[in-house]
Image (tube, rainbow over all chains, first blue to last red; front, side):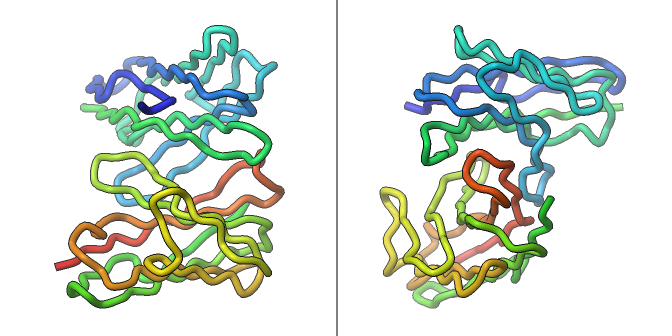
Length: 112
Length: 115
């Protein structure tokens, strides 16, 4: 069973609207949680990295939140643009060896 | 940050042949990683490659099938040996500048199709 679960699997939103992606994880021990954006045919690009003590982190129109007690994270996209169409991957880094546990990703499609 | 390039960007290969994928980083990095991403799936770690030592393979991946070289701090290769259609996938190289807790930078990937 995947230890990093993302929802929804896919999402279609109108340009200019906001959306929120969810990530629940069970991995332990926890080092940090990352959100990556992967455009079609490209490698993932880091959006945010949050450690245990951080509740929120922003990168432009992307805002990530973390609740380490409930092991939940979210990624909020504000005022979506066509260029936001991509897969968004939640990654949890675990233990001192830094093994990355990848979620399956949420495919976001922004339509005009 | 680090910029990572991969060659080739894509290839179509015959069953039973081998393909070597090159990964070049624009700065010296401590750790490099090779991942596989099958269509519609997330990334699966194949192995970790440190300069000057043998690569460390994840469960389900073996050196005979996926030999890796790491001759210096900016370069690595992954070979997919004796290919079968099941090896059709995207192979991605990544690297960290300062260790496991640092940001991992990814290359653009190599799209491999095996006929």
